[in-house]
Length: 107
Image (cartoon, rainbow, N blue to C red; front, side):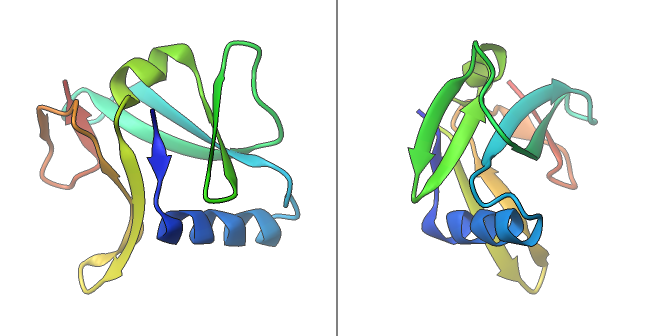
């Protein structure tokens, strides 16, 4: 299961409206790369792919491909805005470590 906090859902809804795609969803992917081996990737997407798992969290559709779900199961996506910056944060129980900048992870 993949969850989206209420704060993150609010920010995604803002992006959807700003981009003229109020009925779209959030595509969540794990891709190879970054200094720790894997990186998270977020994008707005109009519809789910045929192999996607679809979740609805706090009024936002999440689209996740099967390969990415292996690395994301149990993850909560949050949005923070603090003195260190703002952005989406992944609380991933599968991660064994992250790089110094927090942009990539290892499993």
